[in-house]
Image: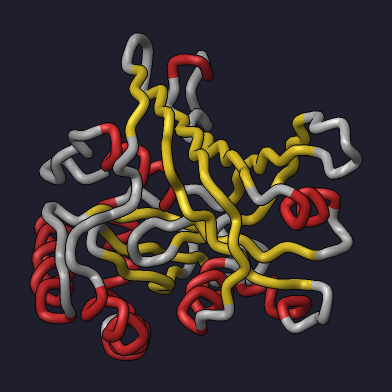
Length: 246
């Protein structure tokens, strides 16, 4: 996070920031064999523009069989990597219901974040799911523990969602130098080639594209929420000026 970018303030903002930054998460479902035994599994994670979690899962997997029987789920997003004492690091557990989705935006956002999934996304046994979050629990550090019900971003975002593809194409085609500056100067990742893969009201996502490191992700937060293409342009320009000054 950049020095002059304010840290997320509310538990909901912190929870969204954690989820948006995660490549993977732990999905909790109830076994469909009648026992109701909790079952935890590793899944690839993407988020919609409003931070709704998105999954691509197969009907052959036990977690999907469990969801088809009982669609109540939990999702653990772990932000403790790099902490000498993991229990002092941030993590958020999201509670809700898994629902199959065929919305093109969901597929686009997921595959932009996980390009390797394109090889099986079209298989008949795979489908995209969104998690409708009803409650969340965050541990943001020692003693910073909260339950909250307002996880999903509630501000205006539809216009930004409609403009997202154009913003990404423009940045990756005409402003590759700016994207590299975001990674190297603002996020301290001087190695690798980076592309923009997502824009939402609270920040942008970068993905590494050089051979052998494809899929590594970086999250760059905005100083304030944006709601449309113009707002995103202003914030992206501000960030590149900040990066050049650095």
